[in-house]
Image (cartoon, rainbow, N blue to C red; front, side, top):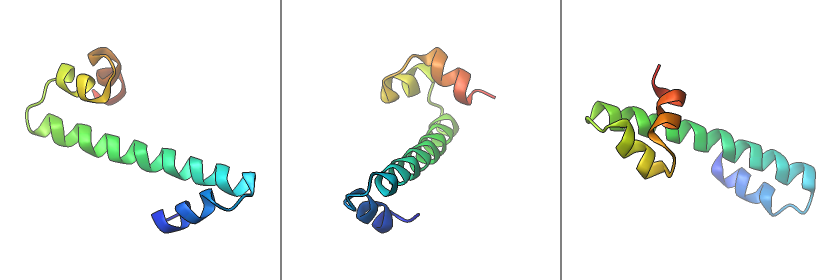
Length: 67
C-alpha cells in the first residue's frame, strides 16, 4: 500500500479498510526504524544514543537490532 492509498483508506469510514491502513503504517514505520538504526550504527552511534532518539532503553533497541 502506498502512502496516498493509506491516507485515503484512513478516511474511508470503513473500519476494516482503515485498520488495514494502520497495519500498513506499522509495517512502514518498522522498516524506516530498521533502516535508521542501521544507518546510525554505520555512523558510529551507540546503542544508548539510538535508544534515546527512539525513546526506549539501549537494552531494548540492542535486543531488537543487535544481531
